[in-house]
Image (tube, rainbow, N blue to C red):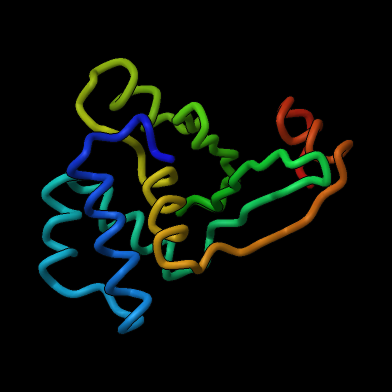
Length: 138
């Protein structure tokens, strides 16, 4: 499922999913692990999760994209299938400097999925095409 992340990150998301299903909380040890693995963007991503900023768009053809409302209010369309976010932090930190695994937006998507708190929205295939091409929102 998350073929672009190291095994330690994969296991961390599985642990969060299991514990969150049982307790609806993330224990301190897993929060510390998130900070250790993902650095400063972990806290920012958790803030996006708390704000319910992540929406999964799905179309009748089976396509999916995730939209995240960033801290500034800007909407970012993230793609887990290719591990990409159009935000400046992803471009600079992940792609150019190779100093992080991902940005806060993609991490928020992974966390929302692990916690099963992702907002869901159905869109038409035409709307999804517009989202994927970057020509308009849903």
